[in-house]
Image (cartoon, rainbow, N blue to C red; front, side, top):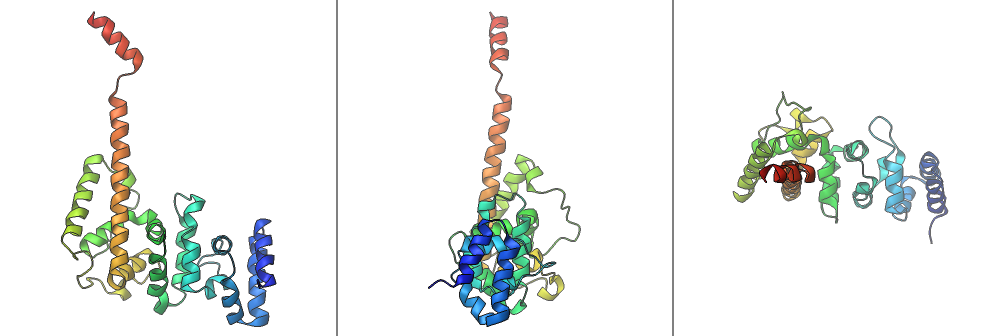
Length: 251
């Protein structure tokens, strides 16, 4: 039987009162204990759980974020793509708030996401604003201190992007070159509870998932190059009017 608080929370979310839904769940934890809330969260639809958690990050914590299990979190996170947030800022903040609430469980949360359908996409989206830096880390094992964050992959030329794709393919074809090496940078040195530490944990503790993220980024680059090349080809095609004028002048 569904707990009344689950129905109440869903109704509040449907009405647009996300804060009220979170408060209802937090009240359950206050009155019946944390374990009761953890159990109830299994019955909260993942889309509702995501709607609540998206409003919280490291600067504004939620009792739901503090108690959600890796499996519950993974089921919700993979739905983030439905929001069509180009920057994925809400996903980024929400993930940091949850996966770093306990450093010893960071890998467990990331593994749960990576093992669920749609998980690779969610993890790749998490690095949306740091995609080029992540690829540099994948290739070198180090983080560039003077990286120009204003110049992302979206602004690169076709030739530069093709070279980057070839570099990634070369590394992938060399077997485990992306994941087998020892860390060049200790985790403590980049423990920012943000994307760098997440990248480090993925590469050295969850190498198979990390490699899939690199492949996903590589494929996104390839699609971007195709779009750019189609745009260039379209620009080079003469307009119907220009083609007619050229034909008349030839006559």
